[in-house]
Image (cartoon, rainbow, N blue to C red; front, side, top):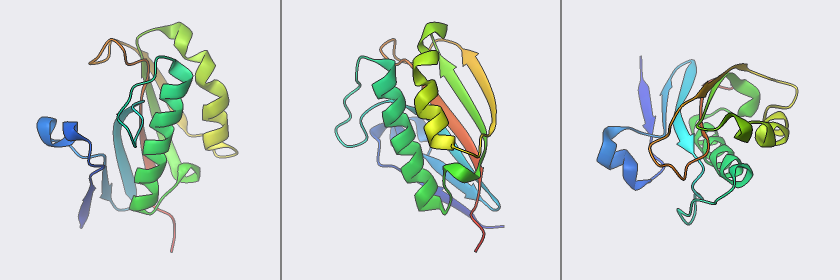
Length: 128
């Protein structure tokens, strides 16, 4: 079995020892992803912007791996504040569309108190 590791270039990958995604056919495993702006590294103050950034990073990793949001089979959300989950629902519905995955929500502290959401997914590779 071939395993492909996909790095996003975030400095934490090298510091901590992980990569953004791992492809182990037929699956793609995307690491927990927080809402830093993928281009500037800035962490917005609001959960909706952090959610949008996390989804952008995840979408890029999935595309690089040969998958997309339509092929996500499992998603886990981590949030320190349960009140922050509902503002993300419209974006999550838009990302997954007609292909909602199995889902779990965990309320727990994140590594930085300014982080409001972390998202991890497991997806299938696209056929072909």
